[in-house]
Length: 333
Image (tube, rainbow, N blue to C red):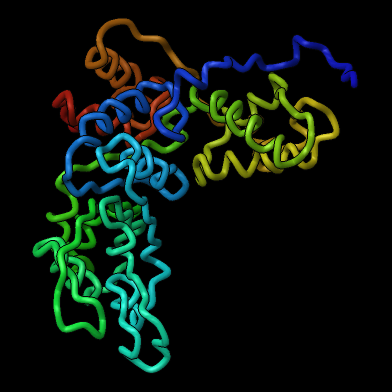
């Protein structure tokens, strides 16, 4: 089968996936390499871990990576979406129940804690738990034991707890929606997963991974992407993060009639992003010197306008503000 197109139009994917992985995570940006290093340090311990990040950044992949790199990797990994838990069934879901414990309990049922024995229990979106559910979880973290519904005796549980949230739990604590004592129990170690817009240099690697994965399930030979299509992907701001990028590549493979992804098979909002960016983006400037010096020069160049200074340095505002704080640069200067 032959496909006729100009090879100069094709974005050359780097074929470096084996060198840029941590578990199922893909990325070789500075932000991801720093996160991998932190994960390596945390993985071997037994601490509870809180994984923070926006929706779609891959918090469950981080949790799975921690489990795989830990001494518990031979045990089960049990993911639980706390947002889907029922208040009325919470006790049974987490702690299990004995046959006859309540109407409809026709057999013994193993709860999440027992299912994760000698392994890892991952509580995704823990900020969605009600206050009563939080109280029950806190007791388990303090006592390391549970009581199965319908049983009179407590028994020990051996699990490592990993949690994740897209919420600002410190704010939730201050506003009374999350228990402070539970917060301090679950955030012994914290990991911040960077949003895709702050690591756009990873997009080609992610595209390579998704092409390899999705073209198999689609049963189509789509293994390349044009330079112009890649520019569209890198110009888009990705509010849905890596999940949205994966869905976009799947969409493109389904609609592509060639072995190469071109802009016309991308969703319109992504296809048009490159035009929007060229109209609104401020010019970027390369500043010499260390990072603190570059921050100061950018502020000087923009007369203290922090938004424009961040744009000149190709940083998000959040990252720019964080750098100012790290280098003790007063925002009033």
